[in-house]
Length: 463
Image 1 (spheres, rainbow, N blue to C red):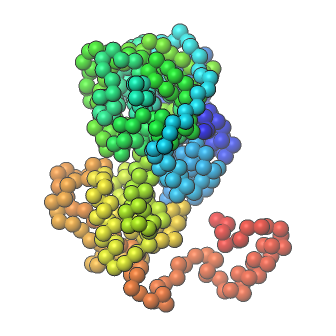
Image 2: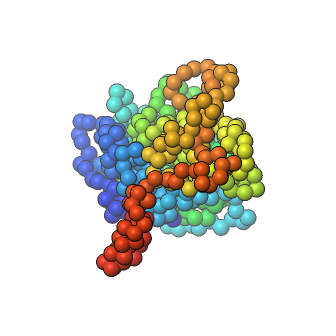
């Protein structure tokens, strides 16, 4: 388990986190949005007020892969999950997928609470106020609901109405777990495993099993609170009660998971505020491309779909599956082995049956690297003939949820950018690369010089 502030230190050591003094006039979410737009590192905004929180944005986000090669959209999440300092994409998907699996028996670790009680009000925490809005906003939070069966976790975001009241949004599926007057807890600045698990379980409709029975329940140490178990290393914990009054359901910006599942609005009356010394909590500018909430949904849904398709045929034909955040998850890329003629069509339609968030599936050959996304896009026009390999459905298909264009019905498309499996290998063009562009004798001489200089890795593998 990697605590949130340890996660930040790892990012700092890899030069992927910078610190700035929190501006007095400009909204922190404007700074966060500009850092994302510029493909910058994660940004920590240090509080100038002793009672205020440090804010950090981009810690679960990533860069536009078409412009950066040294960092990837999944790198920061992978570091937080403890995969590696330079995590492979498929390893990140596997780590996220495992968070939602069930355990055979409970093995929950209780440790000491990192945060301590304070006399601060919600307004004194210094959460950011979005541009053109009147109230502060909390994002990337974890809601804990304790019951006799166990504790349930779900994502939460909300608006701070006053010193003790939050108008919150949660998945509608968790609403049946509590009633007016029940105690709940909100945790901010939790380990990446905990937050990724809440997103995965929410968007795959698996909130009906207590967290103690999930794999994440044995990897994230917890503490008991009035509202249930929360990660012990949480930077801020808010203990609250469900208010017995109709919440204001006015329109406001929504976190990205709400585009895939129904949400519910509720009012929380906060009774206690716990915070670590010099606490730092994550935030995300909602609705901004490449933001943290969008990246978390992209990785969680990709992990879920990868697991489903690789357990459908009795074999694992798919190398990787991606829903790029840069495309707002409206397009699905799949690197796969073509098992037989017609497999491409079957795989694309199976993916369409699993989710309605995208209306386009692009299949590329197995062995294609998710790190080289330019090559993935290049295969669309190199290998896919517009008259044979761009296949549209009838025009009355249900509209996809996530693309921002069009209303009502439309057409679904799948693009087959793979080599025909019936072709002989000698008819399939070799992949062009820098190393393969040089004669064998020159490549051999370079390898010998490389070894003579004392380098251990293969020069062909160095990017």
